[in-house]
View (spheres, rainbow, N blue to C red):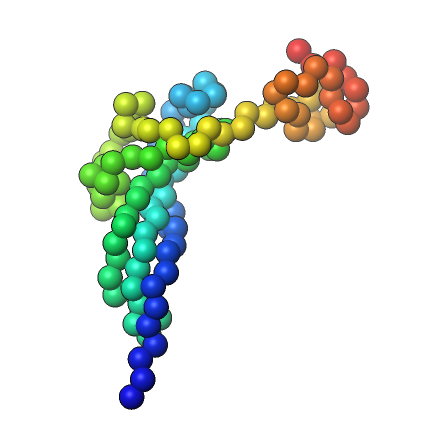
Length: 122
Protein backbone atom coordinates (compact mmCIF):
# COMPACT_ATOMS: atom_id res chain seq x y z
CA UNK A 1 0.00 0.00 0.00
CA UNK A 2 1.23 3.49 -0.74
CA UNK A 3 0.06 7.00 0.19
CA UNK A 4 0.22 10.17 -1.84
CA UNK A 5 0.43 13.17 0.45
CA UNK A 6 1.91 16.64 0.52
CA UNK A 7 2.06 20.06 2.13
CA UNK A 8 1.40 23.16 0.07
CA UNK A 9 0.25 26.80 0.27
CA UNK A 10 -2.51 28.50 -1.67
CA UNK A 11 -4.47 31.73 -1.93
CA UNK A 12 -8.27 31.82 -2.38
CA UNK A 13 -10.51 34.75 -3.20
CA UNK A 14 -13.40 35.17 -0.78
CA UNK A 15 -16.89 36.31 -1.72
CA UNK A 16 -16.59 39.86 -0.35
CA UNK A 17 -16.86 43.27 -2.01
CA UNK A 18 -17.21 46.57 -0.21
CA UNK A 19 -17.32 49.91 -1.98
CA UNK A 20 -15.14 52.53 -0.34
CA UNK A 21 -12.86 55.50 -0.74
CA UNK A 22 -9.37 54.03 -0.66
CA UNK A 23 -7.18 55.16 2.25
CA UNK A 24 -4.10 54.62 0.07
CA UNK A 25 -4.88 56.73 -2.99
CA UNK A 26 -8.09 58.59 -2.05
CA UNK A 27 -10.00 57.31 -5.08
CA UNK A 28 -13.31 55.47 -5.19
CA UNK A 29 -12.91 51.70 -5.38
CA UNK A 30 -13.81 48.45 -3.65
CA UNK A 31 -12.23 46.02 -1.23
CA UNK A 32 -11.72 42.40 -2.26
CA UNK A 33 -10.86 39.74 0.34
CA UNK A 34 -8.35 36.88 0.07
CA UNK A 35 -7.20 34.13 2.40
CA UNK A 36 -3.75 32.54 2.28
CA UNK A 37 -3.10 29.25 4.08
CA UNK A 38 -0.96 26.14 4.23
CA UNK A 39 -2.60 22.72 3.96
CA UNK A 40 -1.85 19.02 4.20
CA UNK A 41 -3.38 16.86 1.48
CA UNK A 42 -3.88 13.14 1.23
CA UNK A 43 -4.58 11.77 -2.25
CA UNK A 44 -4.86 15.41 -3.46
CA UNK A 45 -7.68 16.18 -0.98
CA UNK A 46 -6.93 18.92 1.58
CA UNK A 47 -7.23 17.41 5.06
CA UNK A 48 -5.76 20.02 7.45
CA UNK A 49 -5.43 23.80 7.04
CA UNK A 50 -3.27 26.07 9.18
CA UNK A 51 -1.44 29.40 9.16
CA UNK A 52 -4.44 31.31 7.77
CA UNK A 53 -3.85 34.97 6.90
CA UNK A 54 -6.51 37.26 5.53
CA UNK A 55 -5.84 40.14 3.16
CA UNK A 56 -7.82 42.94 1.54
CA UNK A 57 -6.91 44.36 -1.86
CA UNK A 58 -8.11 47.75 -3.01
CA UNK A 59 -9.32 47.64 -6.62
CA UNK A 60 -8.37 51.23 -7.48
CA UNK A 61 -4.62 51.18 -6.76
CA UNK A 62 -3.90 47.58 -5.77
CA UNK A 63 -2.87 48.33 -2.18
CA UNK A 64 -2.76 45.24 0.04
CA UNK A 65 -3.93 45.34 3.67
CA UNK A 66 -3.93 42.62 6.31
CA UNK A 67 -6.92 42.13 8.56
CA UNK A 68 -7.37 40.18 11.78
CA UNK A 69 -8.27 36.50 11.65
CA UNK A 70 -11.44 37.26 13.58
CA UNK A 71 -12.75 39.58 10.85
CA UNK A 72 -11.43 37.25 8.12
CA UNK A 73 -13.29 34.28 9.60
CA UNK A 74 -16.51 36.32 9.59
CA UNK A 75 -15.98 37.18 5.92
CA UNK A 76 -15.32 33.52 5.03
CA UNK A 77 -18.55 32.52 6.81
CA UNK A 78 -20.46 35.11 4.70
CA UNK A 79 -21.39 37.21 7.72
CA UNK A 80 -22.20 40.88 7.22
CA UNK A 81 -18.90 42.73 7.72
CA UNK A 82 -18.19 46.41 7.14
CA UNK A 83 -14.48 47.29 7.19
CA UNK A 84 -13.13 50.60 8.48
CA UNK A 85 -9.65 52.11 8.13
CA UNK A 86 -8.66 51.01 11.63
CA UNK A 87 -9.34 47.34 10.68
CA UNK A 88 -6.69 47.54 7.94
CA UNK A 89 -2.91 47.30 8.31
CA UNK A 90 -0.97 48.34 5.21
CA UNK A 91 1.20 45.53 3.80
CA UNK A 92 2.05 46.96 0.38
CA UNK A 93 1.14 50.33 -1.09
CA UNK A 94 -0.35 50.14 -4.56
CA UNK A 95 0.70 52.07 -7.58
CA UNK A 96 -1.45 54.98 -8.66
CA UNK A 97 -1.56 55.38 -12.41
CA UNK A 98 -3.26 58.07 -14.38
CA UNK A 99 -4.29 58.16 -18.00
CA UNK A 100 -3.53 60.62 -20.75
CA UNK A 101 -6.64 62.58 -21.76
CA UNK A 102 -5.42 62.67 -25.37
CA UNK A 103 -4.51 59.00 -26.11
CA UNK A 104 -5.77 57.18 -22.96
CA UNK A 105 -2.35 55.57 -22.26
CA UNK A 106 -1.40 54.65 -18.69
CA UNK A 107 1.12 57.11 -17.29
CA UNK A 108 3.16 57.15 -14.08
CA UNK A 109 2.02 59.73 -11.55
CA UNK A 110 5.18 61.87 -11.78
CA UNK A 111 5.18 62.41 -15.59
CA UNK A 112 4.55 65.91 -16.92
CA UNK A 113 4.18 64.83 -20.56
CA UNK A 114 2.65 61.71 -22.09
CA UNK A 115 5.41 59.39 -23.37
CA UNK A 116 3.14 58.11 -26.20
CA UNK A 117 1.72 61.29 -27.73
CA UNK A 118 3.61 64.14 -26.01
CA UNK A 119 0.49 65.84 -24.62
CA UNK A 120 0.94 68.06 -21.57
CA UNK A 121 -0.48 66.44 -18.44
CA UNK A 122 -2.21 68.45 -15.74
